[in-house]
Length: 97
Image 1 (cartoon, helix red, strand yellow):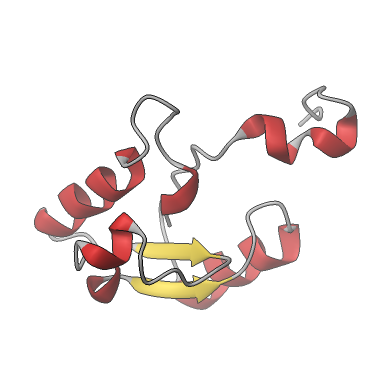
Image 2: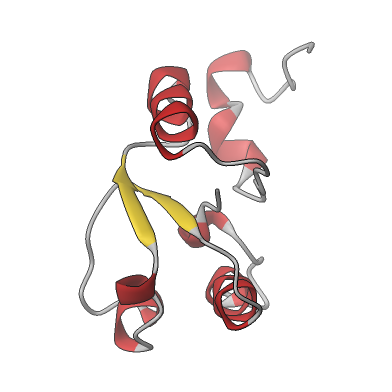
């Protein structure tokens, strides 16, 4: 499962799209956890989104991630989302795992 909108960094905003495209080209089934459907996004404009399994949800909501993983039977999760946004509830400190 890939969170395509959280991938890449400020210098490469399309890193997630490129990763999804490469995984699809190599025959992987790519599941995206997507909060907002944006038809103008690079993911949609490139046609990559139409080849993915799309699950509605937000990365920072554990229940959404759990549902996406369980309902799609993924075997690998790639998460490169923005840690600063996810950790804002923890005063910028990463949670202990």
